[in-house]
Amino acid sequence: MKSISLYEEKNSTLNHLDSGCKMLYMVAAILVPALIGNKWANVAVIILSVFLLAISKVLRKTVPVLSVSGIVILTIVIIQGMFRAGNTTVVLQLGPAAFYKEGLLYSLGIALNVFNILLAICVLIFTTKPSDMVENFIEKGFSPRLGYVFISIFQIIPQMMETMNTITDAQRSRGMETEGSLLVRIKAFLPLISPVVMSSLVDTKERAIALEVRGFNAKTKKTFLNERKVTTTDKIINLLLIAAVLASVAWRVKLWLG
Amino acid sequence: MARIEVNHLKYRYPHTENLALDGVSFQIEPGEFIGIIGKNGSGKSTLCQAFTGLIPNFYRGAYGGNVKIGEINVRDVEVDELCQKVGIVFQNPFNQITGSKLTVYDEIAFGLENLGLSRKEMIRRIDDALEQLDITRFRDRNPFDLSGGQMQRMAIASIIAMNPEIIILDEPTSQLDPQGSEEVFKAVQRLSQKGITIIMVEHKMEKIAAYSDRVMLLDEGKMIDFDTPQKIFSRDDLLEHGVLPPAFTRIGRGLDRKNAATGEYPVTLKEAKEALEGMAV
Ligand SMILES: Nc1ncnc2c1ncn2[C@@H]1O[C@H](COP(=O)(O)OP(=O)(O)O)[C@@H](O)[C@H]1O
Ligand SMILES: [Mg+2]
Image (cartoon, rainbow over all chains, first blue to last red; front, side, top):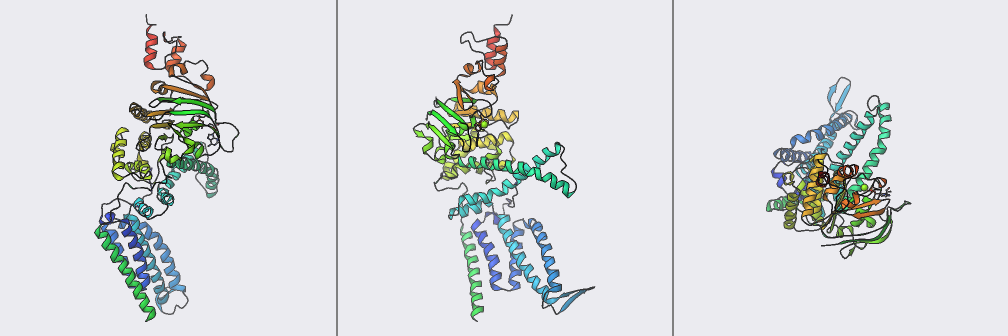
């Protein structure tokens, strides 16, 4: 049984940082360049995120995320580079295809934004235990039920996939074709749906009861086994991040007024 | 310690015709080990859930009579209040994992966090529960990476940590391999020796016969009998109620060897030996 865990305990500096701190980093990393509205600000924050991911030893985990989004970005670059309205200056001619400076710059802006946002999210997700994040929210008054759904989904989806596999195996051993052409697969898939849905429903009900008898709906204020320690370092980092956001807001306001 | 008192309990699930429990009355004393037997659909699981207040408070449906744990009428309190007195462990260890914790240790903490216990108290209780169920060495494992028997013991530990006086086990070993079952039975026996009231539904009659102080036989929602294992398994109509007595009892019956003093058939290996000893030439 494997759970889809994006988080991995690496005993890194960022692992030890308070989850609130990293959430704030994510927000600031997205807001600051957007407010400043300059590509170089984006580049600087991207470099910072990459650096943070590298020292947390999770840079490699970003590869699948970046390569999938990279393909999408590449399409945007090609389309905008060739066909964007207002394209005038040719910078690259590949046979019949001409790439224009205006479109390329525009799509570069999109690419930087997307990569910046993704990397900022990666910094948070790859270095923070999901339960730390959710417990942090619950302490602030967030619904424990929603929090539970959010955390458990990562463990329970793989379990449903397991059920699916078990049932597929059972059907196959009874002689049902589950491999081959699309039509064969679809035909095999339909009768699978109801047992999977049924067994998931039963599982869900059983799990709901199991949670119930462990006091999940108790009205007492919940406590947490894992103490949330907000250190001085965390507080200083929080202050710096807030200062950075405020400074870029001020900058934006100044641009508007000036 | 709380005594259990069930009076004329009747229950029908919502949208069904037949009574799942039909006028059941009995008492259970603190510290007793009770086995519940009966064929599929006889109402064993329903009765188990009636002890915890899940019936009727979670399922709704039509309810008559009452179930009392000490002074508390289960119908009048919330399930999460009662769960500190009566714990329940289900058949499928998988579905009892919360799915929100990454280690066995944190998984056991789940119920205690919900009760709002202090960190110090949680640690004390979790360490103790791990010890009692003999799973301390798995404390940092992912709950989903345990074997069935280990998972079920973790589920029991999660309940034990909440300090109940009564533990209900509804077919706790039916999805486990023989080794896993044995681990669970041993753990349950240890809890019983500590004075916790145990109520266990189980199909392995040899185990029921060996551990139970008294055995309850259910059929079609009615309590047919509630007596010592020897009395229950010596009944002539067991097969009609869908129960196959322990192998030792069948041997005793086949050879017509009863305990001379009580006139009952043997139910355990030890008793079978004693009953058969007279036969040797
Ligand atoms: N959730 C439910 N909804 C409706 N009927 C149920 C439900 N659970 C059990 N029953 C019915 O109640 C009766 C007793 O079931 P149960 O207590 O599960 O028996 P056992 O555990 O002895 O196999 C059966 O007739 C069963 O079909
Ligand atoms: Mg049952």
